[in-house]
Length: 172
Image (cartoon, rainbow, N blue to C red):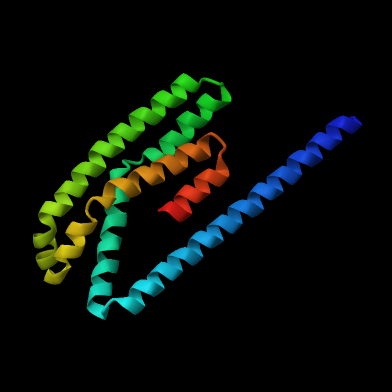
């Protein structure tokens, strides 16, 4: 049978979990609203063709950033999470540094490749020669999107859910 103290501890953990869940939901909603607002501003301020180039380039960036992560977000969740459970912070730090380095190198390579291949990609694959400038201007963001997402998963692995959701939904 549970003692009165144990019952209070369980109730407090549940309240804390409910609070974190509500806060994470609020941050996700804010992130979705801010993303919608950004899209609305772009659609209303840029000419339709330029807005289309932006959205096309943004989609290409998102695909390349996801590819540039090399599947590491799930690996970081696993390795950092298990290292945290064992209180082995050196192993968690090593996993994070190694994953970040590999993702940085690969995402940077993809960003440089996108920059250099933008004229060809825009003309022959996307069939939008005018998108070259947007692709080249946004090419460096492949690295930033990849690393932000990777770090959001690392924060999730250590239990910093609010920071993780903020990074993944608002900063990105």
